[in-house]
Image (cartoon, rainbow, N blue to C red):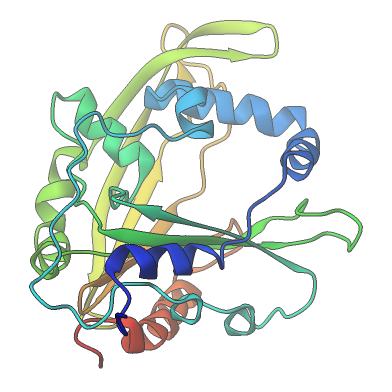
Length: 285
């Protein structure tokens, strides 16, 4: 009898920890979304050239190839304690945890950044992972309103072939360069008004080296969407958003905060995340 489990057995064992939303929970959360939020989301998606269906159910890459792992990695699975914990947020009360695991997923840094690149005939440019864990921590408005509050943090944690993990951060400036300024144009519908709108988007790598074996702060800003014909605003200007990308060994984590989050808090959590990744990384810290 074998004493050491195979990679497949380890992954299957790891997936047993996953907490999945039931159909009723998903439908209940969807009903709580206000009409105003739906309208704004429609405008943003239209101007980004992304369909709502694509966001609701992320598609699989048509030619996804699972990378081959390094010769003799010490660790395969990503344990739950390698993720940020509720106590790391300083908000221990009424926090809902949503999680899932994946195999062979692209390391998507920013959905709209990928749309910018493909609109220019380029590939999205994402590196491929071997396996991943993702989580969203939600702050409930009240204990009886399951998941109705804002997202406090979303985290994707990936294990990559070591060379791919290193390359992701080394080539991020090249990845972002075509989207330093991108004018997105698309159809919109707000209330009874329809037309063609436009908005200017910018991405920059704002900071590096603040956590782990390497890190980058990816910042996105967007102008107020306007009707292309009349120049009149059709929605409020989006709040700038920041994404922290941190590498520890062969692990990459992608962190985003909710609307009330700040860049100093994002950098703090990036350092906490790096420390939690240490024991699961190859090589360990």
